[in-house]
Image (tube, rainbow, N blue to C red; front, side):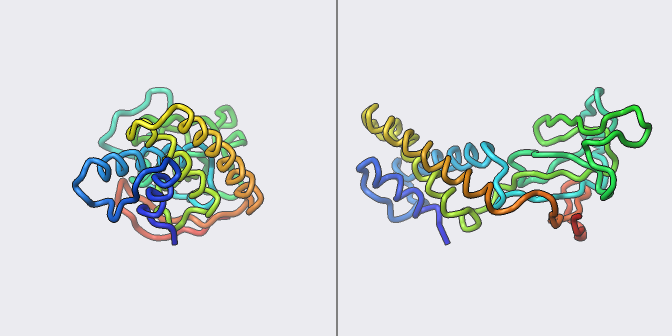
Length: 210
């Protein structure tokens, strides 16, 4: 299982920096590594609909204490671990977001994300989203891409040459392409199992997908 310190040290080694013994150290090198790791991880998770990080969640109750989007009928709070909303649909098997639903006049595939809220014309709403999963759940190819992206980011933090950064960026793009292609071969989104049924931010119950 890949750990954060392994990714950081892999990145540091690629730019000729001394390795860290712990990310919890109070020195400046560890602090910079922690910050850049979070940024790189979020960046890569948002770049694609990764199988290893994709989850389905039914948002059971409309958000009561949030600003309503006037362009839509319903507003929900997304899960706390949501990095990217990939799609929204009705939980019924025979009513997907790509069909005309309910009134026969409204196309329900439209939605909009505003911060921690998603607005749509579906009630109840089922969203497919990218979860902020720990590195132990990442694919090997994705962690390789992450380490190269982190290496490129650390070049600025540790004053490495532009040539070193460009090399790391090139290797990142190559690794990302491999990870993306491999991920695409490992299944489809035709059938999923829902993680949790949410009421606001409270987790309650379990739902099987279609």
